[in-house]
Amino acid sequence: MWKLHRYYFKEVLVSGTITFVVLFGVAIISLFYRGVNRAQGGSILDALMITVLWAADAFPQLLAIAVLFGTIATFARAAADREVTAIKAAGLSLRVPMAAAMLVALPVSAVSAVGLHSVIPWTHYYKFRVVAEVTREFILSSRPTSDQIAISDVVMTWDHEADGRFSDVVLFLRDEVFVADQAWFEVENDIVSLKMLGARSPLAGVSIAAPTFRQDLREIGSKERSDNDKDVTSARLLSELYRGAAENANGTRYTVYRRTCFALLPSLLVPIGLCIGVLARERGRATAMALGLIPLVAFYAIDLLGAEMVRWRDHWAMSMFAGYLPALALVFGGIPFCWRTLRS
Image (cartoon, rainbow, N blue to C red; front, side, top):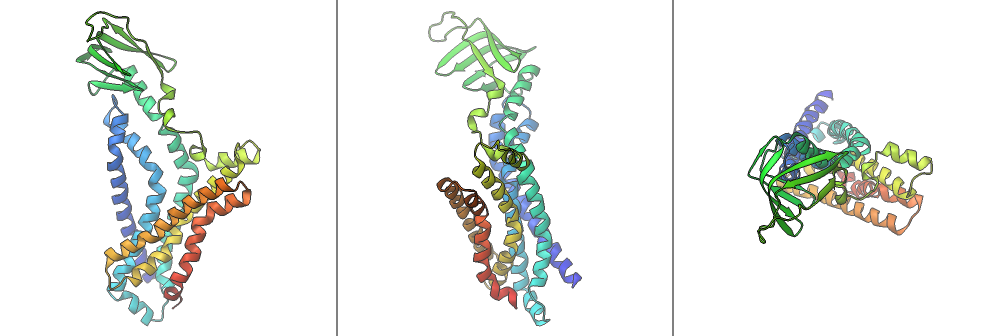
């Protein structure tokens, strides 16, 4: 029996790992432009860090998808090669190889739980501030890697730079354009100020008073986010809830329940993935993978419904029900689908 478990455990693990690496690579590539754009003036490592922080939000979801597709691929192949028929002929239930897939899914669920409750909130909090830190380091070090920097609604280009002074500067400030012989940044208490020498309007061709630009680096990125529970760990949320300090108690409960629900997703998808793989024996793995999208789409659609239910009815019981609703839908929807395949 252990040999059978080890055989399918290895295959599900390898298939799931390959799927996860491919999906996470696609996420990194799709977000790399955003990272490069936000790390203007920084290094390639800064751009990569920003990209990884933005991609981290999808990490638990990608783990669940990897487990599902790894399970489908493994048992679709096993069904096509008549291994499933041999297992049944030996008098064994499909619950035996399913246990091997669950040995992969349970640790993944544990990792997802840690990530969703503790790590992902930190990355969600920090990713909106890393741009400001990159900008600050750029200004303090004065070692630009390109000839352009953008801060808030100001874009500055220059011809050459030496010792922190930029020469032949062109400054795009809101709807106006200025040129200057020299410009430099001064930072004090995270407030950056732009100083210019020989500023003038290119249209008027005369010297003008240098425009004033001041920016609090701590505010960079804050405009893109709203204060909510996404960047607060579950331990802190529960602490505020039990102390009576939570502004929206039922919303806080819903956030914690929802994170737990998403952590359970890899384990809930294993029986469904096994049955999809077995039933798609004659249709091939591509069809099995396409069918695997159905439970995923249903899960995320019901998750959106749960969020609306919490807004509709502000009650602790509704927050719990809505938080676990996607998992309950998979359980009660999956039992009729898997019953006939797994009971034999």
